Length: 411
Image (cartoon, rainbow, N blue to C red):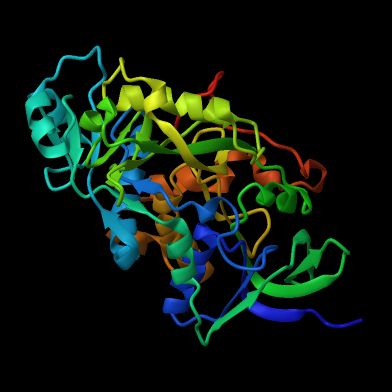
């Protein structure tokens, strides 16, 4: 029997999260092996070319608000050349009166100074963003091509080994090392430390070592609309990104004078079908009306030009699962990124690397990542009793009741 190839650190999953973690470890002089079932990086949801990035400023737990601010700053510093800063505008809810002082105080309370977020009246927003709605202007908000970012993170490196076309279906601990077995139950790799960044596939891998994790797929479809240069919609198209009930990128004028506009996304909880749907495009047309406050806009003006369908992975409390798996020493989990893969990947790179390298986590406070935030991300938050007893293997005790929408919504 051939002995499996051994590496000190193996990362399962060559999407944006696994690639970013691997890149961080490489930058710190570690030898890394990354393995994926596909033939190249970014084959699934990370092939998404239209991701947006901004701190969360709406409803949410205080920890979510603090975490997205930290993650945004880390992402902004990491992505450099592929960071497309065009600004993001978040409109005020239609039924809410604009109160500049109230909004400014709220932004300050969640650590967002005017360099990151500014209240705008409808008149100011029209001048800055081209949208006649009051709201918050996130001047450093950006979009990112996840495919480009992932491939950039995994460019050729002397310390990097890539294993493609290798689907890992089972894990096994033997003599203190983790064996990675394929669909033929053959161990093809072994590792001292194993980072699992495989989105929904993380669930099956965890199950193979007796641990259940509360992960769920969410299908999302983005629509690529074409708008004729003479259509009334042209006067409403934004020159910045907008994030509210749905999101859109700035409209781009094409050579023939028409406009290309990316709008999304549908939120189909519990579904993993990658086939495009006309209903999802129709849903996004409705979202488009709301985003630019154009209720009378005709659907026919937003002509179908293409789409992108991806399946996101979420946990019940909408926070990522990120950190050491205490019940199984040597395993680190980075999954449930939901719709914030750009942000959470940058955060995971710092947190997971610190844990893999056995660093004092107190050092993470230089990024603002205090102990309570590390705990809020830890996989252990979903388990009671830490599965200490062999008889408890496979048991799941969630301390966070799942909060999923009951009907299609955007995220």
